[in-house]
Length: 297
Length: 178
Image (cartoon, each protein chain N blue to C red):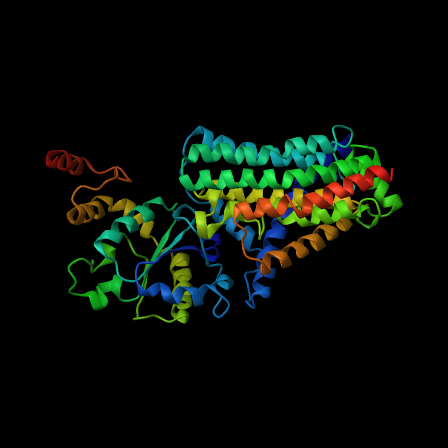
């Protein structure tokens, strides 16, 4: 019981710390790739401190409620995700609940944007939902292949199977699904070439336009948590989870570094180009992967 | 402390001064070392940089952007035009003194100032913040009636309600004018 309560507290804290670390790593590595010196690693923390101490303007109850809903959604998802050996809600739900709850994050953002009533927010939200329409198709096919192969919907069991019998991405039956997941990964994290929803040069950072001060700080925290969620899901599904938190974190860093290298060199897709890409190659690979997974049972 | 090292800048690209900003924020001079990064909207920023001459028409946008930024906020005039009009000293539609309309915490003089001057400006702003002298947002609140009076003298009726409550004599004056 004591370990259960400790997990409920520690698991979101670990995800938050990891997410803020990733945001710092993001800025430093991008700077080094562009031959700059870059900010210190703690820069996101300094920014958060500054934002929390600024005066803010609210645009009404929905505006406040939406951002809180989005934050609460990501915190609840983390309770259902195994982080190394920590998974407070391992007994219930599994992958299906995670899929369902992951919708709360963009939904909260959309609600909050409705309260903000800025045209840039509407464009940002519509782009975000169109993009998620694009990657949900291959994503669900990949998830279906994994669930068919391991004959379970529990994320903990999927990770345990892999720790005993080798990582899923290196197995014959799930190799193609793993590749498909890697191809849609930038779209799920919202990094280039799929950063249409938060494009600062086109639509003034989309959903975040009206956020300032504390709201922007909450939005940053939500972004940090969603980074952790995206990476943790991939590590659990294809890289065998982790026997402890440190090992799990190391795998997350490696995947994130790969994503950064893609982010650094590619320009931004337009939204219809993104859909065209997402529904062509990743979907074809994921579908083939599903067929192979069913045939090799 | 955190305000010092996390200056998120809104560059108001009015005139030729903006040409010096890309080298400042990209690989050659890299302002991110100092925690200075550009942000897309005034709501997210706390450093307001006016880069170049200010015509009467853009001043309206400048005032609105300034009032949208969350406190505490710092304003820096970049180049000689916002200071005293610069080469537009006798122009009919350019304002000569920016600090009559919004409070300015510091100036970077020159025509054009080099990117190094921006960093000297930023480090100087740090010392001002440490000493509590970068108090433009407080002065704006305290002397709002006189700033508003200057703005109205230029534009006539302003298209937005006052940011802070005006003193009673000022309210009566506005009503009698209508």
